[in-house]
Image: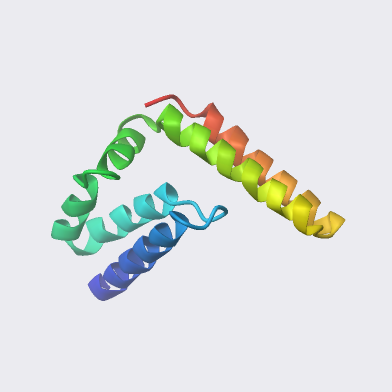
Length: 117
C-alpha cells in the first residue's frame, strides 16, 4: 500500500507542477494531495513539501486554518479571467463557454470564501 501512496503523491506533485504553467490546472490543491499521500508513504517527502521555501507556507496555512493567501486569490482570479478571455477570443462554442463560466465561478466563490492567510 505504501507504494500506491508514494506513486499517488508523485502523480499529484507532477500535476501540481503542471498547474504552475497551465491556467485551469490548480497547483496548491494538487500539492495538498501530494502532501497527504506522502504523509502516508514517505515522512521525508512529506516534510520536504511542508517546509518547501515556496509552497510550504501555502500548505501550512491551509492545514492550520483552511486559509488562502490574498495574492494567491488575486492570481487565481486573474488566471480565470485570462482563461475566459482566451476562450472568447478563440470563439469556443456557447456550451463550452457556459461550462467554463460555471466552473470558474464556482472556483472563485470557493477561493474567495476562504479566510486570508
